[in-house]
Length: 204
Image (cartoon, rainbow, N blue to C red; front, side):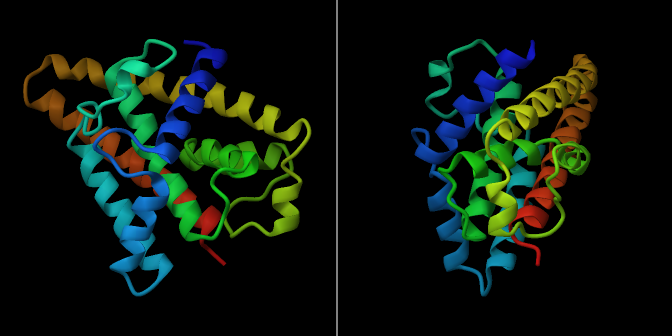
């Protein structure tokens, strides 16, 4: 796994998150469904994150969906599933916040949110402040060389992050205990990513 491979995987997962996979809603449809059942965009996002955490904790929730065979590269099913589930969640939250999820700027921010707690440091290094809803002027600064720099930093960080997951998954050699450990790791990671996405796209 290198940065180039990771970026291809991210691009594929984001496109599938927006266009939908057989048997799954697109990010925009998912956001609209939660909004229809919630009194506010914030509460819709909270419900969305809770449900995605539950799915991630169940481990491999998306791997049974059609479309994974079309990946341009070969990835472990668990990694492909995690990228897809988390990016669809992030894009849905961005849609709830009124962002154009099909813009390059929003896509770059979505990739950044995947870094979880490390996202703020990566963003700060290229002059973008996370932790509050971004203004239009802040979004416009994500142009030129900035997306490339962000994507490089994100790719490096995610390789490290999923390398750590690989070590955790060694525990799956132990029946039951391994599944619990792996599911807890996925759920915690998805929760962290969801909180960063909400702070980026929804917080005032």
